Image (tube, rainbow, N blue to C red; front, side):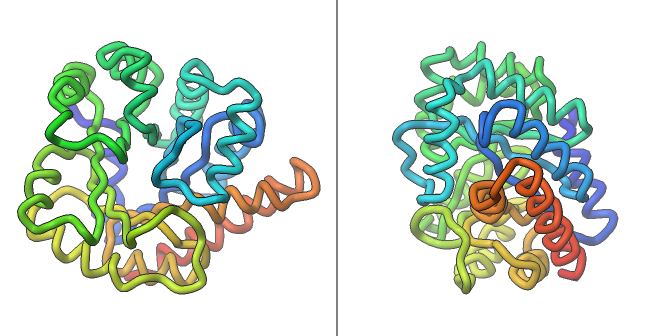
Length: 267
């Protein structure tokens, strides 16, 4: 059965364009503030949302996302709030995935987590620290729940391993365009384009590129070769730097519209 995410990529491929996927941690800047931000992103033309499960020991997240996660954790955000946010995104019509490290899934219960994802309208889960060698229980749970499994590949992933990882993916392949942590950058690495070309040799799945995109020009560049452009730190920074919630939403909407335009100029 196709997820909302699968259907979104069918649509963007028919329109010969990439999708813009926005990342926000659940509970940031508050539980209701996150919902307001998701509404703003949806109204501004973003194609899908990736909801972060805030975690105290992130291995992939840069300082901006860590700061947002800290705010969220201090407010008591946990699985209940993540699923509530996921359900809200689904209700406003955005395909939604959760990005989480493995520990929260294991603590919640593997089968139970997958079922809750599906029950709340989630399309899939990005698991940056789960290796395919340790993913059998997760593969079974996601298959039973009918949700996508999204693994992360990087420029350091060997060709042999790329083929093995992408064969376990569904929904899309998350291509981390450079080595290191997340964060907006003034210059994009050439690693993204090279990595996408290598991944294309192993799968027909859509490939979404994350890490570093913060401007219209960068979004246009990545949309020229990828099926999805993932933006997180730039959106979070718009909310962090705002003097009040309303101006934060205005900044968020303006940035989203700018990035949407960039993505649609990509081809």
